[in-house]
Image: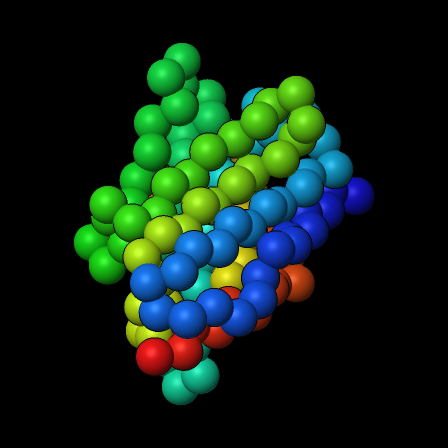
Length: 127
């Protein structure tokens, strides 16, 4: 059974940095898309960043709210997806989820087409 497990959440002050990791149970190139999503209390789930692993260049997608501050990357040799978060803001506070899609998704930052989800890791940014 495919599993993805997040790690690396925590608490940081505004302006700080955190890194998240997501370990997959299979080789990441078996997933066409991998992404990071977040959900804050009382808010809808938001796609933060995603990567099309099947492309030669690993096309990346970012929400406007994190563009220029967050970086998504993969290390295929370690079956791991990363999210590097810089210049964090209090509004980045949320539960962050890793997700993987075995097939094509029409919108990489929408969660609908993703098959596998992690349990989530909390990120808290204080002002």
